[in-house]
Image (cartoon, rainbow, N blue to C red; front, side):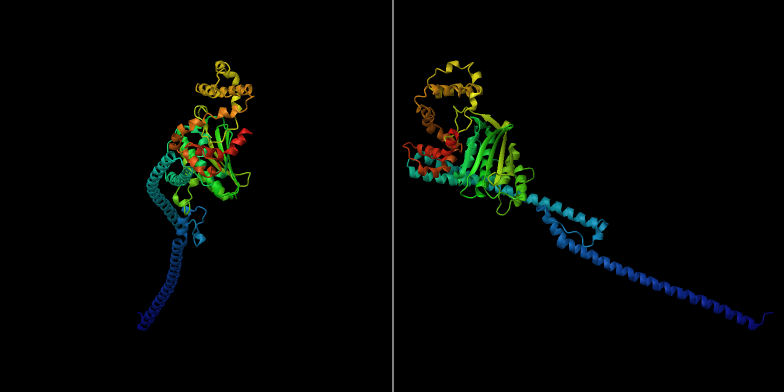
Length: 481
């Protein structure tokens, strides 16, 4: 039988052990709670740091990266800053931020194109009205030129016509850049007439020296005449603006394997590599043209060239340096845009520089002798050439050699040679209204300044012819040499 004191002692021992076990458990719980609190505090600190870093990254995105990305749409050479934390690159957060920038750039480019298209549409409408008014003014000036014979009044009208032509050129270039049609349709014309027509649209046209090395009768198809004149005018305008006023701009017309090249050389300052690359991109016409890319105020000449080269399958290169220290610009007109006109039936304008290739048509002379023996005895050499040229291109080339043999036999009268070239003069009054209506009268108005040194003729159109002949004396002299 267990005594009471032993039971009490056992109970006390059991209670003590339970108390000790409970105390140890409570102590472990307290330590675990302390560790958890420390971990929670560390996680809270880490979360606060991440939140602050994310906030700073978003602020950096909004303050620097987004504006730079928007500017890069218009200026591709600008760099977009990276994230504040380099470790962000490649992480989900970094990829998400880059996607934000890409979406922003795409939307900015889309809106920019849409706004520019609206601006171009508005400018097209405005330039169309301006062009119509300037064409009406041009017609009124031409009628006044044909009505009055007073030399001083005629010179004043020519000057006004030239100023109107320059304004019309600027409006036409703006319309072309905005996607409008060239605004003028012409018939087939001699290529040299298109070049001199573009020259006459400029202030300072007297500084342009044209050297014509084309075969006689080299012409442009109708839809290429006005685009070539516009391109030549813009190339010459750049050359005149960026070269000293006491220097000349040299234009050469040459045959090449695939067509004809019009080369413009100036003695200006030239262009840097970046400027040359940008100019070449514009004249190539490969990239879309936006008005906001053309500066303030916009410089539309090269952009208009780019529109026309792409639209009419022409080629322009401005990547070379001129041998005179400036820029060389080359316009290439391929064979499918070329035609041929009978120079006897439809000669070039009297002011056009004479070609230096007059001896070239003599090569097919043996072929010509088979079918044109009867044409030799004809006395009027000029009319004989006209009749034979009307039969075909080959015969026209051969006939140019026959009058030369007749001139050798009549050499004792050397004055007959200029007389042979003089008969076209009486036909000028009959052709001049049509040429004026076709905008070739711009050359007449462009040479108004040269009229001051010429003698006034009694006929109404004679002062104009004298002005043209005076303006291009150097070209004719070079051809004669």
